[in-house]
Image (cartoon, rainbow over all chains, first blue to last red; front, top):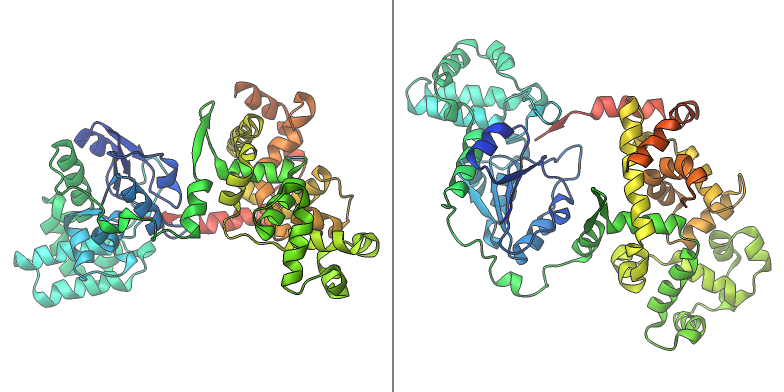
Length: 442
Length: 37
């Protein structure tokens, strides 16, 4: 039974592993991480730290998905305490003083637990959290070290600093004597000095002893799928991963790779869209059935306006295509499904599972990591959009500078815009550009 | 994946010379690169 622990600056990894030797440590949790784990019933996930500023935070429904699957999810100390306070009614287990303060409404601001920190794997803390100051000041007040007014003043002072500037030194310069007394009080009491670390350590120790309370059973809400929405459906497809030679390859990335590179993807996309519009029926009459459904909604080949054809078709298409074909292309290009990845994975199962495509995605990941390691500023997120547009024009053979044809090609592959296609191409560009020629990769 | 790493390293000068990356976005990364938990 794996115990996955998402941990960053709150507790040193060496201390965590000492407390719970079987812990599988992960970086602070971010959106998608829980769904990538591939957890099964009986597994345990402990959320301590999580990103929620520069990366999308772990979503509540990602946690609900694990709870419904029978995974025990425990939160404490930091982001984990916040999510546990929000979801303890649904079976997430919260532990520790920070969790209790959020649950009881003593705390409600996310930045209570925020700290600046350095890079992995040390995650060296550069600032002190507001909740740590608050907890320590209250302990000092109870011990008679600080007066009520002084304890309140120290907390108010800490709150007045942005989390990126909230250091003991900064507080000392604002309320010297009180802060000096508080720090002296904390010098011999690590637990009171850092409530977040103490909470995290307690949870890991409890798990190691088999003392985690309760069952973690989610409750009646998990008996059906009424809680689900299109986002969790898409995320479970997006972040479903399988390893390829040691590299985790997601179904979402594979489908996006195919969306760009698979030669017959446009015909697959069109079949998928027209099938959605037309509903069940004979495959060979799909275009006719789709046109009849469009007509029921007042859209016919004859009703197409110059504005519509000008928006969705290239000038050559608008001038030369038969009207019925023009309408079919417009239907395929304008369709915006709610769950494109999940729907495509179901409608065209071979697209996302193609071994060659999955291998290409894994290679792209390896190439991106290698290139980024050469020098700063060479992350794929920093590739110039113009470079990616040129690349797409080359892959799709639309001709240099022919923007209408490039946009039409992007739409024929299910992209809502050229910008979306450019972003989708980003992770695969370096591999496609520099690895394909001599090795015969596509 | 060793072969893949070899191939991309062989193209290292070509990658550097191609002017693919935007230095301004690097500034954004540096300014926004600190995380918090």
